[in-house]
Length: 424
Image 1 (cartoon, rainbow, N blue to C red):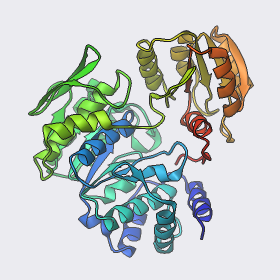
Image 2 (image 1 turned 30 degrees about the horizontal axis):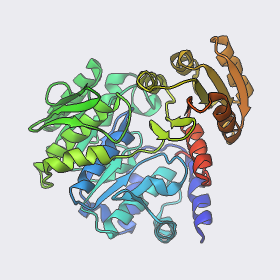
Image 3 (image 1 turned 120 degrees about the vertical axis):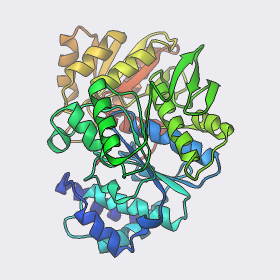
Image 4 (image 1 turned 90 degrees about the vertical axis):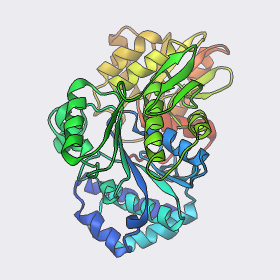
C-alpha cells in the first residue's frame, strides 16, 4: 500500500467515532507483542494546553540528551506531525511499514485513535526511545493511551469537554481524567479551578500518588517579559519560552515541574536542559508568527478560553492595523469566541475551511456584523489570507484563528504544503 492509501484507510476509521475502553487496544497490542510494556512514558491529560505542555516537556528531555518520543493530536497539516522523535516527524515510509503491521493485527472495530496510538507505541519502541510523552485523547481510564504504564501523569487545566463520556461537570471530568494516573506514581497538576483541583487531589490521595500543584508546589510569573520559575527544588530566572503568549507561563511551569519530578525518578536533568528545553520548544499553529510585511500570526484559538488567551497575548504585540481571518465549524458555539476576539480587530475577513463541517463564510460574516465588526467575506482560506495581507498593509498584523482546521489550512498555504483535513 502507498502512503496515500494508508491514510485513506486509517482516516476512514473515523466512522467508528469515539468508543472508550481498553478491550480493543489491549487485543491489538498483544497481537503486536505488547511493545508498550518496556516503553517509559508520561501521560499528558487535561482540556486546554496539552499540546504546548507536552511540547515543552519533550523539548526539555531532548535537550538533556534523552531520545524522546512525542505523540500529539490533532495534526495541523500532515499526519506525520502526530508522531515525533526529538522533534523530527515520522517518515512517510515508516508510517506505511508500521501501519500495515498494525492494520493486520487490529480487531475489525478498532477506532482511528486506537490505531494511531498503537502505531506510535510500536514506532517508539522499535526506535529505542528513552522516554515518550503521550498526549491523551479524552484522557481517563478508558483512553487508548492508558495502555501505557505511565511513570508520571501531567494534568493541564480542566474544563467542560466530552461530557457524554467523562462526566456532567468539571469535578467529575477532572476526576476521570486524573484516573489515568497509576497507583503510587507522581501527578503534576497545572493551576485549576477550585472544584477541579479538589477532585484531582482526592483522586491522587485515593491511589497514593504524590501530587504537585501549580500555585503551591511550583509556579511561574512574568518579569520584564521573561519567565521567573519557582519550582519543586529549582528556581530559574529570565527564561524566554520558545512558545509565545503570556498564557504559556502556566504550560511552561507545569512542564518544568514534571521535568523536575522525572529527574528524581530515573531521568536526571541539569538546570541547563530545563532552561534550554523551554527556550527551544516549538508548537506549530499556537501563537506562531510568520515574519514579513505584514506579519502573520497563527493561533488555534477555537473556544472561549483560547480566545481570551489570544486576546491577552495580542495586547502586547505592537502593530498597525489588525486584520483577523476567522473560520469556524458550524457545530461549534461561535458567539463567545467572537465576543472575545472581534473587539480587537480593525477588520475581519471570514473564510470557510475546505470540509463539510465548516460554517459558510457568508453566514459567519453575518454573525460578526451582529456584533458590530467591519467584515469582508474572504471565501476560501487561501483567498482570505491573501486578501487580509492586502488589507493589513506593510506594518499591519494578520491574525488567523477560529478553528484548528482554519489554522492548519492557512499554514499549509503559507508553506506551500498539502493540507490533510482530518482531526481525530
